Figure 1 (spheres, rainbow, N blue to C red):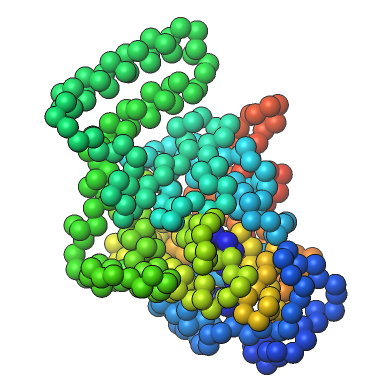
Figure 2: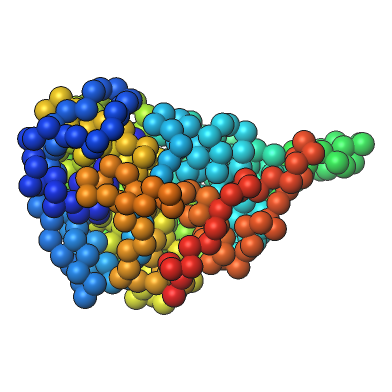
Length: 431
């Protein structure tokens, strides 16, 4: 969730914020914030209520996920390292705060390889309005072989993948297109054979052209949600028909955007794509179209959260009914949380000290919460034992059958890992 989703307004219920709303916020220590000075205690603008047999409290803006809470595991004591968007996003995406490291999907692609011949192993579905902080560097292969980088697809656009379709005109035919690929392959192979055997970039380019040719046939079908039955379209909240959306951000619009990506994600997964990232929010524009709600949490989080929850809930239920959830792991993440005090009167500043993730499927124990925040939602309840992103990454790799300490790649004299020199598998999450 690009921009930093507020845990205290969504999944981490804090009755104390409602009791002390409007009072001076005093955590008993000096707090330096990213963009403001601590304001008064600020209650969420939305009500919470319990869901499922586990009784998990959810905000009304993520209520659609109430149907899934008994299959979900929540972590409320995540601690970050920075309140800067770009660094925190890198940390979540790559395990490092600086550029130049592979995205998690690239590591999984490198470790496990492809399950199909006609689609990429790692696909990224960004926000339709543009990229989040750092853009494609979040899903780069970096020093891993280049074929493991994420392939960017924009569902809903006329051209979801650049150059997927031939240009208009009668000078391109199927025969000439195939002949062009054959010639290009021959030239590349000849170039590759001339003392460039150890350069992985050209080999990756050759494979990328081969995959691109296959995707011209496979991708349009995979991205075509019109093939889905009406009950699935309705499940994902995409049955509103063609209409002119309110120019201001609204729940129907956000549901359409996010649910479409979730449905495409399911179609890609069942066709053998191994790793899919769905992004919500971009890095520019105003009023905000991301989760960075400094000015007005209700205006920004309300539509974004309801759209996200509708799509995510549908994805979980859809995977479950197809028998795919048991071996598909769903992770919800954001770069940090937001403060329990107000910025101005209606916004919240960055909170890198404590935030939430949740996981579902793929061997995860459902209906549990692992790790608590304090009664403000300001810090982990046990500050000496927070959960870190390295632990999330180690657990994900473990559930995929990978030892995070043994998945390494030699680069610049160092055996690099997704988890750097950190990380512990969170055993309480595992069924």
